[in-house]
Length: 155
Image (tube, rainbow, N blue to C red; front, side, top):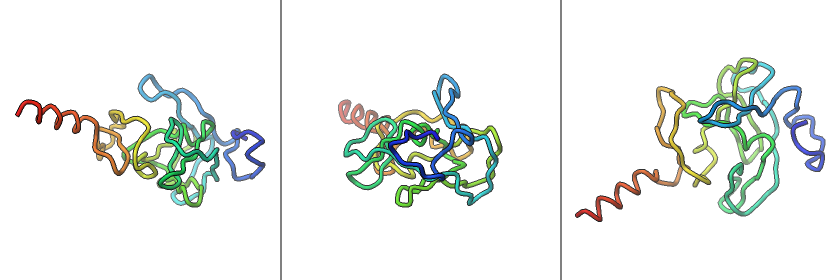
């Protein structure tokens, strides 16, 4: 199991025989790969973590003031504007959105779960629908904020 024993022994928690957190590349850092194939709609895992009140790296938003800190599994799901998994923070489930082959990295859309990100960043997912800049669903890209600030200073 990828989670510590203190989280319990749920057989649907991510298992080391099914997933691994491994380095991807210099841009992305670490990510989660799967050792088995999935079809759209398949349940990959039940997820869990420590409930905290602040936004951190490796947290996922559960509600407006609650976040799940998971530095073992979901905190390493990579971002894509065309993800292959969906994370339901009410049901604490990770499901396949499309066919996932054995050995593939798992990608979610960070805006699916987050109002505000711990840190915004440029996207390099290269999908056709790439937004170019990754933000939470309720925040303006930092680039636009800086451009607006510069525009107001010069006028």
